[in-house]
Length: 405
Image (cartoon, rainbow, N blue to C red; front, top):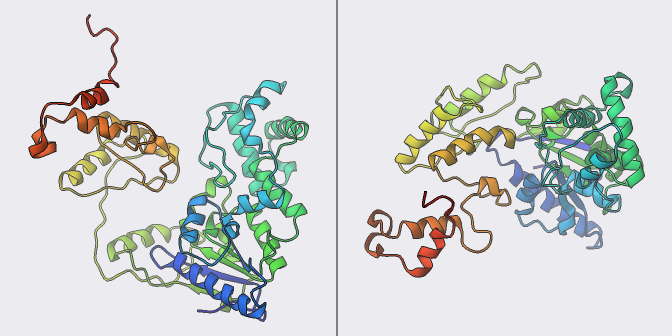
């Protein structure tokens, strides 16, 4: 493993296909750089590495590797920009004010979740203004010349930006634009900047990354160009093909410790259809595995849920994956209709993904178990009549309207 030092080139690229230990590699790189800096600067440089990603989940994955770095050195690119700009007021928290004050009648959907650590990229409203708002951010993320923006997007931008100026707020894209224009160095003045899941960064975000990387002198870009999930919001996975980065500064983690042969074969068959595909070394783990197909889609998930039922009957677990949360809507609705319990233990704050978790008081899972107290198939020898507390738990969620009619 190459450790970045003052004598090496400024930019490195590490491509890590699924299961190849990319996060572990990043953590090992970071630890070695911290030790190198500690020796070189006699322990005086406490923030030698700044780690960033697009999403909080990716940042949390790195932070969980017990790195010898202050907490503020690991986060999303937006959170680093937010702190570097002095924690400005964020426009996405005040969209209701925009709706009430703009004279053109624009109505933006206010997201319930607004977090600079983890912007809700997959939030989708259904108004005309929402569509214009999405396009407005997309064009900026792609650094598209405003002269070629459609007239109705330019008109929206004029009113929206006037409102931002009048109320002294900035939106999520402003965080990156302002940092690119006004913040010459990344927060903490690190010696090395490491970007994880860089395939999901937009052209605008990559520009900031390159600027800050040049300021630190060392930039390590990691990710997988064939796992880009955010192309719809301007993701620019072509950064891994940047011709300015010499070949000897590129590394591919070629051995997967998770993906079996059948899954790798099916994945590569799909990926090779991309116009930008370039062959890389990628070996599966020594297990055949299997790949199946069904005719379900996100709007009609019944066939997939029927298949899931068959696996659950065999006491197996099932994972459903979609690129954006709104694509899961019909599946979750049908699963609830069928009485299929589900959860996402990695995103417990999403109540709609964790219906049975206990937030406060009595959990729904507890109420259901209490209701089934007399079922020996559930409680075995402990099955019996309800206690007063158990009866109260399940009866308190019943609706009393029209029960006597």
